[in-house]
Length: 358
Image 1 (cartoon, helix red, strand yellow):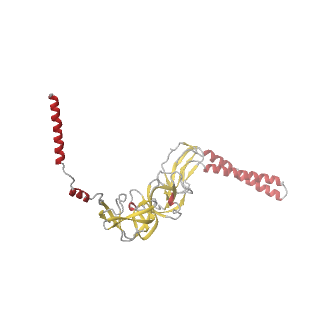
Image 2 (tube, rainbow, N blue to C red):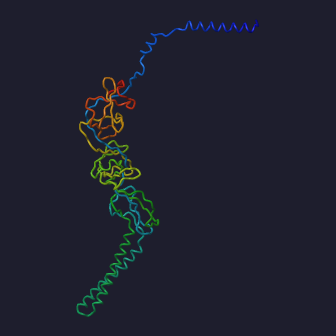
Image 3 (spheres, rainbow, N blue to C red):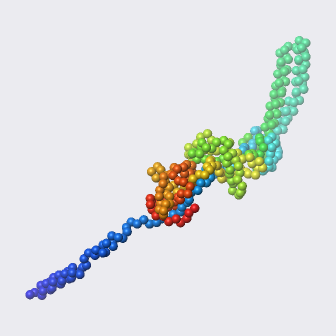
């Protein structure tokens, strides 16, 4: 027999023996193991670590916090009504000035000369009227002649008043009480109506201007009280709304509001930023919970309660919202323990472990 054929037969026989051995020693089904596998729990919920809060009735204050700025009650850039060379400056920058106080003056020598000339003509003009009136009483002159000298006197008076008005325009006077700023011109400089001499600012009282979201527009009215604080001062300042804008800002969706602060001692200066607090409502014995405990779902609001080690949801009806809390009108009672963290992971009946209870 060919040697290659012999080796082929041997290989086939060997493979058969190995296959028989494997089949013989392979274990059959283990019924106990299968039963044990069936007893291994699958899908068991893992406990979630959360924080909780025990509800207690308390005073709930609806507060609105916004930023604003302090503004002067009045402010104007001072300038002359006429042109001319500045002949005097009668103020010191940063000082208080009173309404009507002379602050500066431009050259009025020509106007003063005109005034003297016109005033010198007054006695003669008045005497003419007196004499013409006496003659008219005796029918010595016509009424037209008398009226002519009266007109000349009236014209002279008008000219005098006109020159006096022009002289007044050479004087720069304070239009109201206030603090005058740094002067922007020098003595001897030429000034025109467009030349700013200084800025005058009325700081008693001060305006407090701020903007509130449009949803508060109906609640902010004339007389609404507020408090504000400024950086570097520990105390709070009381103010009161006196005016609101006539419409909502279409870009910011806010309503501009102004309040007045007396600032009687001039202790605060305009231009500073203010942190403003408005108290809208105060509710006694309110049930309120942290905003993060509310879970919006399908147009409703729910809260998870802690009951016997698991989370249980309950639908709630909410009232006002503050910066940190939400008022609960229905669904919760004093003494309930609500879950305040991990709310988006919670499911009905999920085991929970309380890390912190407030």
